[in-house]
Image (cartoon, rainbow, N blue to C red; front, side, top):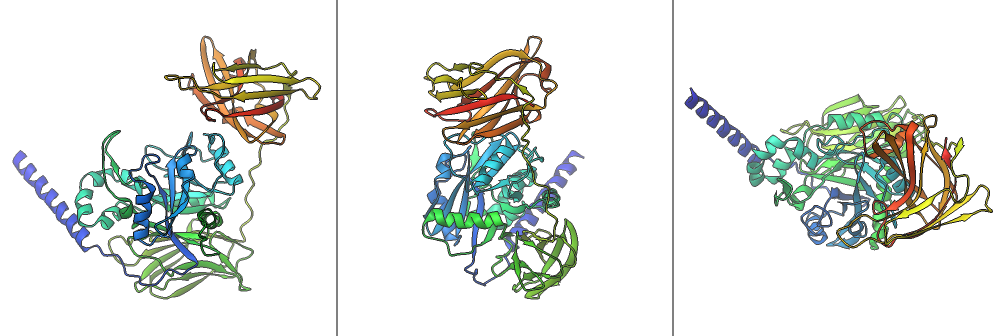
Length: 557
């Protein structure tokens, strides 16, 4: 019996190997010999280099991209921000390298592009990080939102640019069994087929994207998350797939309003502006190039509304240009539901009348082939006569309880080498605390350094919603507001960051938004607050950082 079972399993394995070999050897990319129009630029999004946990340097990355005639690559090394990656923007091998970062936040990972490199660390709170990049005119995409190991957890956030609808690295981890069995053989026979076969239809990501677009404006993007290695553990990895292999799988086509400048930073700004407008579509490039494809809405008066744009009224047509030598299946979605399906399409142009308000996007599949179920082309939406969503408003409540009743309310605490002083301004009304600091780290092995305005006293804050105060700095600065609670002999600490500029600003932070640092896994016991701190440390600033914070009307609302 056991012998028969072994023989059966061996035959099954051989059959699977034969199928894998057949699929790999017979896979063929659909031919599209059209030139890419000059107003479209083709590139890849989300990859890692030796600046964080990738295998290759930027020279190797751009060389691989240049060999495939890619116009740009967007580098997103880990960091808050990654200073090397953020300042790496340059033309290399006729490819534009756009430096950026992937932030590790309390809620997961966020790819950010187009921010100014600050003199402090970006905040770990998702909404704070999104808002800061948005103020700089940059873009933010939620990375691999449903990854098993690092999923996105804070779906209350608003104002981000979009979501990674497809993440190749996430798909590889999701299909781990295939990756550990048939994938290596198929990769040897056909890297393009092996990597494409990792992809499954991203239903959960699509549904989430559509749900957000019922109230706001958000874009979808295909991401590589390429590292040029396959991790087997904390220290072991295999040196494949290469950057070039992944660059052949997922691309984004960005529509620009001018030719890319030879100044790399200006050219990067042109690409980022198009991403911010949503004027791009994503493609599974290994199935076929999408050169010549276009999608836009044409209003009854002839005005053209590009992807990501807003139209005033229905009654016009969604125009899809499909000049391909092979048949496609097209699904036009309205508010996340199928609106029009066109099968076995061979027409060069399709016009779909849009008679109702809504959010319209399109999915284009190949009509034939083993991978015809995959969304070959994914367009970004047009928003037709869609009522404006509710704008997120900051809570600007004034304090009901003023804690800082005088200039000497806070005391200074710090590590030995750092410097800090409090200079109260007794004549100011309301009283102002002027906090001057300079951070200096200690010799190894000590890694933490900090300065803080501290107040250690028992408070019952259970009838309040959060902290409220006014602050300004001598430059843009980021601080922590931390409070601690006691439950008997057990202490818990909670923390949230805030940003100050050179003008006075009202800052309101609800208790519900604080992140627990340590202590009981439970909501804070606000009836027994034991201390609070305005803190700058190695978690939000760098060794040598200095500045001045002015604080007034510190209390609770």
